[in-house]
Image 1 (tube, rainbow, N blue to C red):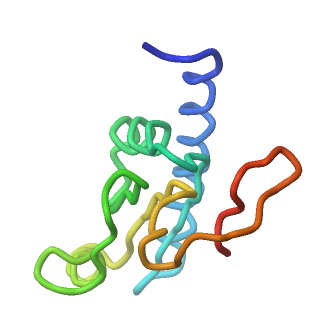
Image 2 (cartoon, rainbow, N blue to C red; image 1 turned 180 degrees about the horizontal axis):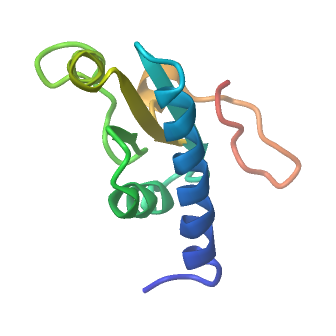
Length: 117
């Protein structure tokens, strides 16, 4: 099931991913394009845009804890990708990495917990 506007959000996210890929390729060697997408509590848009774009090397979502180091860590993975291609594209759903950044105690006008910057 999808909500109203989901397909449009994924299509627009793909445009941002294409732009980030162009930017990363133009900054060889070691270019990294980063796209932050909406997804405070779930990474559905980020995952669908990632899978359908074919240009993303790393996708971070709130449902999966971010591991930075170690054999399966994000940083070693990006180092391998950049060594091979010369650039990388990363998609981040806005709620990803809260276990590292911590949770904010403040709320916005709508009563939603603000995300750490």
